[in-house]
Length: 116
Image 1 (cartoon, helix red, strand yellow):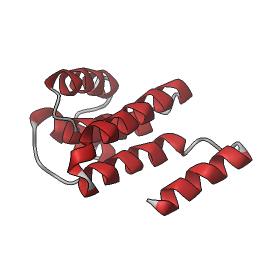
Image 2: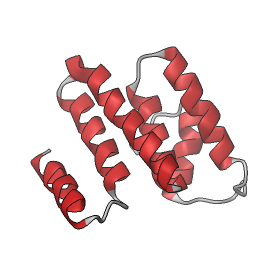
Image 3: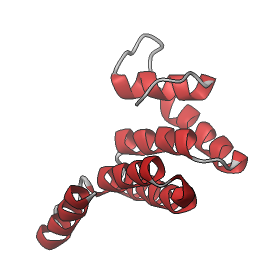
């Protein structure tokens, strides 16, 4: 977690913010894993990653963050909203595309359990 905070601080100092959404996603994922009681706070962090990636036009970071939210959130509405957006992001993809992020997203839609 300390390394992620350092990376975020460095990005703010230098103005290099292209990885900030990924840093937020990983921070939320680690929070949920190490402190299940803080799952709500972790989901808020992941939601922030989704919003930032969307603002920046980074569809892959948005897709990764949505998959992480599906895996992490216990709220049905958040999972449904995330699945809808994942479907939108995947709609232009070919069925035979096999990139890791695409595979994780497709598996998240069907509820397959793989670590992404």
